Structures are given as structure tokens and as C-alpha cells.
Length: 224
Image (tube, rainbow, N blue to C red; front, side, top):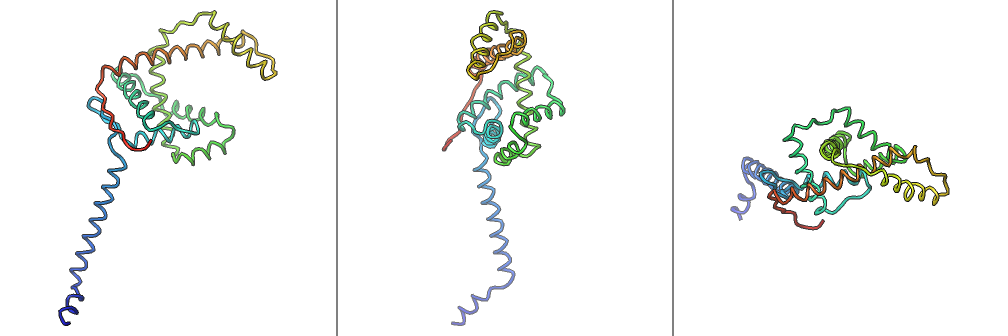
């Protein structure tokens, strides 16, 4: 009986030591959980992509499009972006200025019906203003590089511009019961649309070839 009462009255120093041990154990377990949340999902050459990279692009897609692709699709996009970024940095392609990035964000905001709609979408995405500008700047950097690299190789046939006007602009205007704009007023817009399509085709062809030249190991698992 006496031994039971004595063992129940532990010295204060022992209690403090036990509490400290529990605190350290909790910190260690939290570190393990954090490590599980953010892990390597792909190895590219001597570099890695993290799950947090996938999550960041997913949130940005939610902001821009109102939905996001699967984790596997986003990982493929990040791999392509890695290829483009590596080429751009090797060629010392200039990054957009803060003013350019801010203008990109303003264009994004204007694509929404109202400021309130943008704010609601931003809140749902969980992105801060600084994160949005950083993502916009990165997307602008990659887009500008592809444009500068492949635009000179794209040649648009004047007949293609006329066909786009007659089969696209005119038809869609009539379906809406509207008077179509003149061909002259539409020419530059149509020309740029076709150039962008050509740049996309050239870039996709280049990326397909580039993927065959680099070592990629995908480690993404679990639900998308």
C-alpha cells in the first residue's frame, strides 16, 4: 500500500521531463506528417518536382478556369514546364518585370464578370495576391519564351485567314443574330489567333521530342 502511494507521487522533475519528451514526440510526429504531405512526385534529370508544386498549379487552375485537371495531368504539365524553363534559363531569356506580371494579373481579373466573382474564386482557391502574381509571372515567362522561339517559324496563308473569317466569325455572328464585323476589322485578330495555334503546334512537337531526351521518373501515387 505504501509503495503504491509513493509511486503515485512522482517528483516534479520527472513530470517535467515526461512533458518535454511528449512535446518533442509531438513535434517529431508533426514533422513526419508534413513530410508525408509534401513529397517528391517526380525526378527529372538532377531535379525534383514536389507534391506542393502540383497543389499550387491545381489551385491556380481553379482560380483561372474554375476547375483543375487531375494530379497526373498537372504533373505532366509541370514536366513540360520544367523543359521549357530549363531551355529558357539556358538561353538567358529575360524574366518579366514586376510591372509585366501585375499587368498579367489585371488581365486575369478583367476576364471575370465582376470583381466580386474574382474575389470569390480567389478565396475558393486559397491563393494570396502574392502567390497569384508569382504564378502569373511564371506562366508569362514560359509563354513569352515559347512565343519568341516559335513565332518566326509560323507562316499563315492568307487563304486560311479568309476561311477562318467566313467559316468562324461570320457563322457565329449569324447564329447569335448579329451583324458580323468586316473582314478588314477582323484580319489582325484572326491572324494572331492562327499564329498562336501554330506556336502551340510547334511547341508541342518540340516538347514531344524533348521528353525522349530527358530522364523522368514519376513517383506520384494515390488518388488524383
